[in-house]
Image 1 (spheres, rainbow, N blue to C red):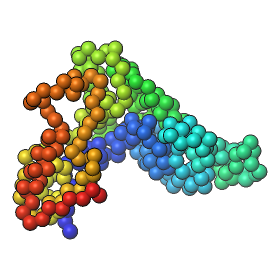
Image 2 (cartoon, rainbow, N blue to C red; image 1 turned 45 degrees about the horizontal axis):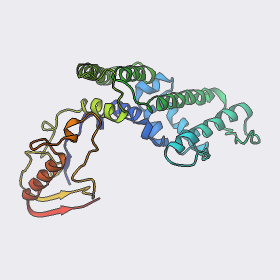
Image 3 (tube, rainbow, N blue to C red; image 1 turned 180 degrees about the vertical axis):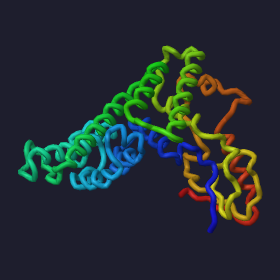
Image 4 (cartoon, rainbow, N blue to C red; image 1 turned 60 degrees about the horizontal axis):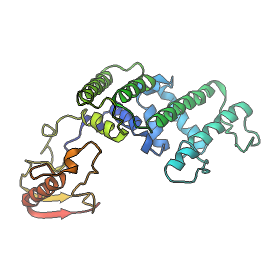
Length: 300
């Protein structure tokens, strides 16, 4: 069946922007194998750590052989409300096994660490480069934990670009430069608003910066296929034979956003102020009126 997906911003399909969002979201990440290895599939990140594209399958095999599954280390798992002693199958334990295997070969366990004996030969340096990459991720994970002033956030994100991206060219370079301009503009706006001494959490800063990278919603492809997947947006009350609303979980729709400390409107609501819950109710009414034959609502 021909279909089209509308309202996809660049940050959801450009690999370099997906990687950028992954890096900025490390405090909430599980550090799964697929998530971390996918970062190395971005040429700019791969070049930064001297890893060739044809070495990625070997890295995957070593990671699987060293029984790495998810989590940086016990401290990281503790931050996810799990026991800190659960060190097995983390990146730290797996990389220790790799490096020990390079030094000892397939020998008896040492200090409770089982050596991974496949590391050797001319390709052994890949284990060291992979270890450097994960170490940089851990450093960034720790740095993103604390609240910072706008100037400190700007410095941290600029440093992040230098630490993780190298020899970026073409469209990827344009996108990263766009992010740099977005970062500079956000800092100017924050300083103009008198927030130079205000410490801000990561989630607020990240959302503002990443949302600025998306193109406007109404100029996206729409009605390009027999089946159209799109977000609920105003002024799209176009009649359809069938309208399916997905993801309508209790608590997820209408949307509710927790107020932030500096949002004075949320603390003193007045008639006429924007309410996202009321907006969502209106969008639901538009979708209801657009269905000509069948309306399907699902929480899936």
